[in-house]
Image 1: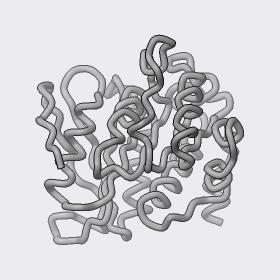
Image 2 (image 1 turned 60 degrees about the vertical axis):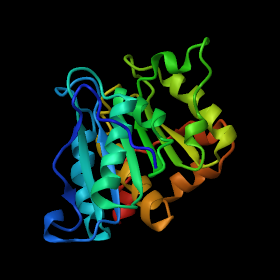
Image 3 (image 1 turned 90 degrees about the vertical axis):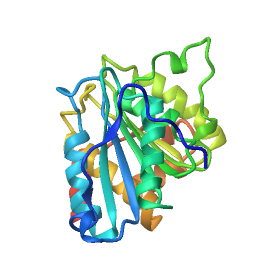
Image 4 (image 1 turned 45 degrees about the vertical axis):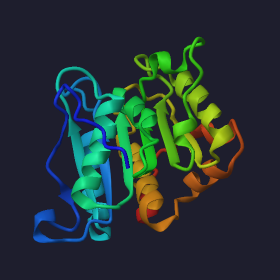
Length: 243
């Protein structure tokens, strides 16, 4: 597999968390989630609560999480690719999920072609020129991956319609693509953070280990466009799963 050189800005992996305890104790690692933050460390969105929830829910399965730390500026595609290389170097042939927020969501979508990646989670992805009229949506790298995009309908920072257009293009080549809309929520996804985190955990564990998802995710993956790409995230999602 081609190795990607470390980004010039000095990307690195944060401390490992999960795998039912400390990885250094020799616990088996069966999958790794790379958390890709957005532009600002002061506005991490749902990344931190998602990291905590994944440790609780996936540690017994051998799931490890690493936050991809980087220098100045937003997390980029080359940061994500290098981080996936580093996972392979440390843990061997394990599935990798790229889970990003804001600019990190964009990086996750663009770096999905890495051979180790089996799934992508993009939360309020900031797509910018990726879906400009002059540039066709890049979706080839999403083929063969499980893909979930989550976007607030009141996002004033990152256009929700841009992520819908990218999801629609991806769905044509990859049926394992779905998108949920968080009605009335903004870019940070604060109003329904618990539901967003629960949805994300359900998707990641299903994509990486069991192959099973909650009924809403299963329905979204199976539904034709635009239904499966405008799936509303129900208030209280996650509480019913625990019940």
